[in-house]
Image 1 (cartoon, rainbow, N blue to C red):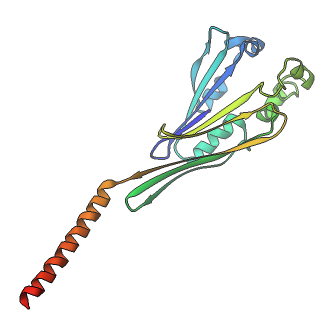
Image 2 (image 1 turned 30 degrees about the vertical axis):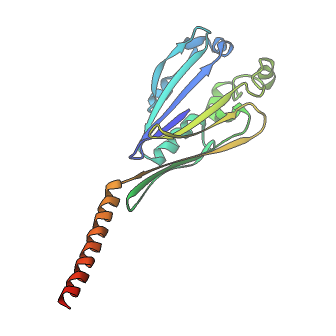
Image 3 (image 1 turned 135 degrees about the vertical axis):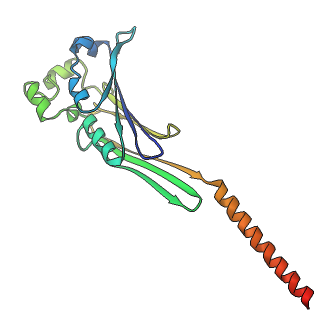
Length: 213
């Protein structure tokens, strides 16, 4: 998942989900996906792709206009509590502008964290549609069976990222923070010219006083 912030504080959340051949087969490939609910909530979808090794890839993107909308979009990705302290700030001072974007990411180590009550009800009371024994049998509870990489960037340049294990069996977290500063050189040039003119006027004033004396 990547979050790219533009100069005006807006941006795009992009999510790419990759399922290996076994996981793809378990859901019936692209035909087993139901994605209409994502489109109903403002996500723009790219048609699912199947690679030569039978890996299935699903891509979606959601635009946001500020930090509050970004936080809402992130909650729709993983549910409340996974992404916290989401912020986008623009600070202006004399001759420079600084953009600061940040977020904290926390996972429990249990992929059931990404389910919810509504989905659990649809899946017969099982958060992931399988009993713990069934999940263990197919290796879905092994560390590294499911991972999430999160990338935060400003203008597609300054970037911070973290990779978290969703099936590690223990909680883990990461804090992402990116800063970008731009300096308006002409402001300092004008200030330098102003100082030079002031100095020149003082010199001329001193010379004028000496000439009078």
